[in-house]
Image (cartoon, rainbow, N blue to C red; front, side, top):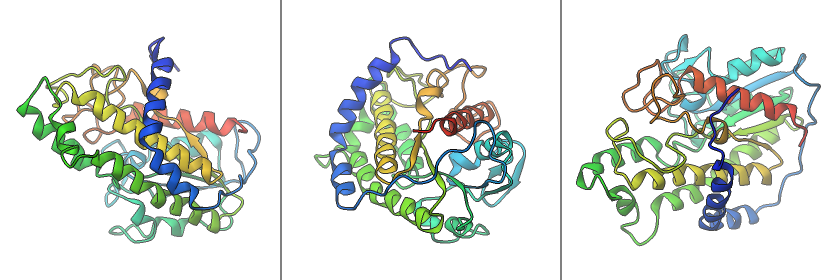
Length: 306
């Protein structure tokens, strides 16, 4: 699959990750307060998981709101979201998708409308779990709404970044650090319920141009807030990677494979819809192509043994 990644992208992202890692030093301190879990669950043969019981946990990026066909109105869940595509490609013997739009880490333990606590789906017999969570814990929807509303104050500046740093520190960096122990708790709960399962922590895709450019008014953010919000997304993904590694889980990078298909691209090229979608998808969420790209990232990660 051609992902349209710029030739200098990986080097640029590597330098950015070093900066992001420094900003997220608190996450390492949070993780260091617990004992690392040993890796569990060897990979099966390539291409098939016959006899495997697969459970998918997550929020709206997992459930696929608006993408046809919707099979659960309460959770805005599509039968063409990435878990469904992965289950079909791997020929699993049992599949349960309990992902739900609006879910936070709290919904792992409590019901969300007609959707029961997501962790209830994980049993001792579960062999494979994917989990994509944390975006709503940091206030993803609120961040987008706030930054869009503030953009008119200074279209060439960074009013959103100034807002989130008005207390003398970056409130979004703090929110991500505070979410780390919540994700850690989720992964430990999954391991306790399914001690032999492979656990894959799925990161979030690339929402905004990786080069920091903007596309107002298609995406109504101020020019210098585009790189700030891009970096916030990378901080969230880095935290998920660190917590996954600490718990002996595998991390699935969906950011890299989706570079070049962000909200700012033309309708034919984008896999993430802008705030006024042109394809069936929720605003600022993956469309069917985006879900397929995340499925491919999960499938490729399943083929790797380390």
